[in-house]
Image 1 (cartoon, helix red, strand yellow):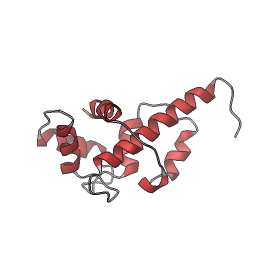
Image 2: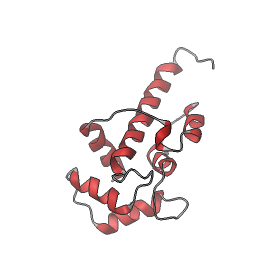
Image 3: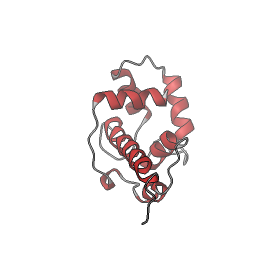
Length: 120
């Protein structure tokens, strides 16, 4: 895969952001079943200090749950959090990394707080 010198740093930054989102998904998925429930989403947001109502959690779930199964998959979580990003060639990566086992990275609490702010 050929890259121009100017696009590689941007692509690496975007990849880093996406990998941080994958790790955030792991944090939200408290029972490690590969899906985020409304209870898991609300619980982690509250543990990060957000005073979020059940109605707000429900609205977030409805907005992101594209297949309407009441759960957020990794793909839906990534779509919700990357819809405004220019993913370039990373779009193909996201299309293939649809399970949490596909990616391995660590995240800290501050990253998780920043992602939670984007969700709200």
